[in-house]
Amino acid sequence: MSDSDEQLQPLIAAYAGRGRDALLPVLWDVQTAQGYISAAAVRQISHCLRVPEADIYGVISFYSLFYEQPSGEIILRVCGDPSCALQGSDECMAALRERLSLNGKDVTADGQYRLERAPCLGLCEHAPAALVTRRGAGERAVAPIRSSRELLSAAQAEFPSDVPYPQLLGEERHTLLQDAESSAAVIAPTASDYAALRHAIQELTPEEVIERVADSGLVGRGGAAFPTGVKWRGARFPQDGRPRYVICNADESEPGTFKDRALMETRPHLILEGLALAAYASGAKRGYFFIRGEYPHAQRRIEEAIAAAEASGMLGTNIAGSDFSLHIEVRRGAGAYICGEETALFEAIEGKRGFPRMKPPYPTTHGLFQQPTICNNVETLACVPGIVLNGPQWFRGWGSERSPGSKLLCVSGHVERPGVYEINPGIRLRDFLEGPCGGVIGELQTVLMGGAAGTFLTPAEIDVSLTFEALWDIGSTFGSGAVFVCNDTVDLRDVLQRLAHFFQHESCGKCFPCQLGTQRQLEILLREEPLPGDASRLQDIGWTMTESSLCGLGHTAASALLSAMERWPALFAAEGK
Image 1: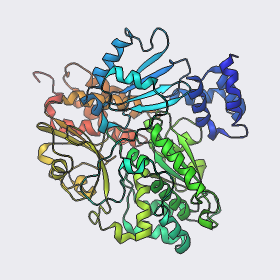
Image 2 (image 1 turned 180 degrees about the vertical axis):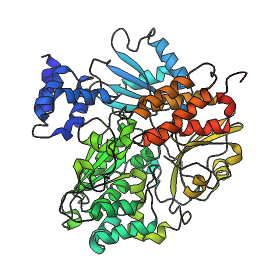
Image 3 (image 1 turned 180 degrees about the horizontal axis):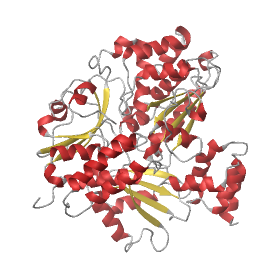
């Protein structure tokens, strides 16, 4: 055993007595300290947690942020997805390769630097972006990257270096967003924080809280748009004595999506209050906050906010002097988009590979640890305190009958003012782009609405009203809340290739349609010239994944491509055919 492995012994021993669900935290501790997870560390973890070594290796190999071999003192991950590509991330990668004399390799000759192309890092409004990992120090996000020299300098700077990124709020009334500058130094709860939770504990029964959420019409803001009140009611009843769990799903990983990151950085207590209200309503005493591994700043904000809320008596034991208690544990993902699917997220928390489960049974009866579980997206939970405190009709003061409440959108690409916006649903997409977003840069070619799993809209379609129902009527969606704008200089085949690469990379491989379909989809799109029959092949692959994949990743992996084929068939036609 090496000296470094011996130094890990007390770190791993701190988890003695824990179960398999502690696997992700201990792997992160080892990875941060050592730069990779050695065979000796795996043996120690196996003995400590009583988990077979083979299972541990299976988990390590599943996540892209974990390494089994030495990976370099400093890892530079540069985003290669569409928003960053438009702002020069490929050129940045090329400049770094030249400056570091990589000569076709990924690691420098002295082992100091490793360079990787990363999927979306959730900093699209500040593109191009990079995630820097330094052994013994952890991670730091850097955006925008102005030069290769500046990125290398940031990699050597003090860690962590948390400079809050400014957020744009749009021109509507705001219930969710807050300027980063005004919230950066304030982590202790203010007088207005947790007012809804105090009101619920003192004045409302759990059933009344659920009724308010249901009557508000709030639906999930993560993409599925499932009624929140229905989910909460399903997890509470019947009262059979089984433990309940609540989870905040902050594994926001879809290209072009960064609204949840903005909320975590600026309104951490609002999200935690929503999670606590979900626990009060369902009878849960334990909660988890699952954050994607590429959000180091957001993770620190949430951890600090939890500690501050516990110190003020608004989380932990006997909240606000009542008999209601809730203990929240932060879980950090390790680079797997599939963990945004709630059952895959359960598997990750339990210390397994993030494979989605078959449904039924559903999470409301057999979720985390096979117990009733509420799992909600960050934005969804942030909407709850206002509803509970002010009533459902207050929430319905925004939007339409079928799209109540304000809605967050994250805008990137060719607009004058990219950023996060809180809109009043019902505004036309055209007015939104020309107003709050400052207009399109150049001649509009298309808008990718709803993220990588969304659909393309042509200039003739942007008069659509931004409501769930109006978007559904034209075959589109709010999806993850992403709005990616492309002018007429953009090569759409390049955009589609990058989206296809994302889904191929992120497919977990559990079900055959998605595993093989995402691979074949990418192979066809990477051809220099389309072959006869490619359009038909892509249609067959796309609809097969849509109809027969196990989870939402496969169901939507071809959504953007199929919409592009419908609008621009010439992109996929073989020459002369």
